[in-house]
Image 1 (cartoon, rainbow, N blue to C red):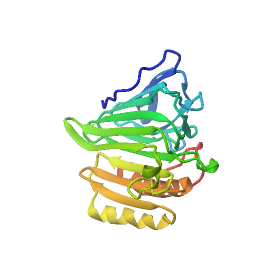
Image 2 (image 1 turned 60 degrees about the horizontal axis):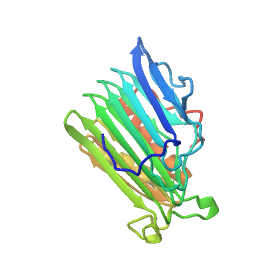
Image 3 (image 1 turned 90 degrees about the vertical axis):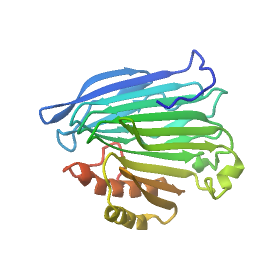
Length: 285
C-alpha cells in the first residue's frame, strides 16, 4: 500500500471505515460481509443488470471531508464475482483547518473477478489539504476498471484552486508485477492553475482506466474514435501493457462523464456479456 506522511490527526476528526466482501453464490454475486463505521454507509445492493453484477452505492453521510478526517475502504472479491461500485453523490473536500485529510483504499480480486469502481465527482475546495491512495491486487484473469473525476474549486462561485494540496497515488498489481502506477500532485497556486502543463485555467480533470487484459492497437483506434465527442476539453488515450488509460482536462463535468460512459459501453463487452446499465444514482449521459 502506498503510504504518505501527514500531519497529526486530531481526536475529534472522523475515521470512517468500510470493508466489503463479495462472493459468487450460484450465478449471483452477493455481498457476503459488510462492516462500516461513520460516516460511511452502504445502500442495500441491487441488480439492474441481472444477478451476476452486484451494484453497490457507498454513502458518505457527513456530506464532505474536513481537515484531519481519515477514510479507509477495503474491498475483497472472491473468484468470478462481479461488482459495480459507485457513490451516492459528489464528494466535497472542504478548506483545511490546518490538518491533512486522507483516504486509503485496498481492493483484492480473486481469479475471474471484475471490479468496476466509479465514485462520483470529487470537488476540491480552495485551501483543501488531501491525500489518497489506492492499491489493487489482481489475481490472474481478474479485471479492474475505474475512474476518477476531479473539480478543482467551486467554479459556480468563481472559486479557483489557488491554495492547498491534492495528492493521489494508484497502483494496480498482479503478483509482483506493477501493471499500472499513477501518482499525481496538484498544488494550489495561481501559476499551476493557469499554466498549460497544469490546469490551463480549466478546473476539471479525469482519468479512466481498464487494467488486467490485453488491448490491441485496433481496439485503441476504435476507442479514439469516441474523442470526437470532446469539444470543450482535451482528451487522450494511451495503451498500457495490460490495459488502457484515458485522460481528460476541461471545463465540463457533463462532457467528461459522457465521454467516459461512451467508452465504458464499449469496454464492457471485453470482459462481460452484459450490456452496461447505468446506476440509478447517476444522471443520464
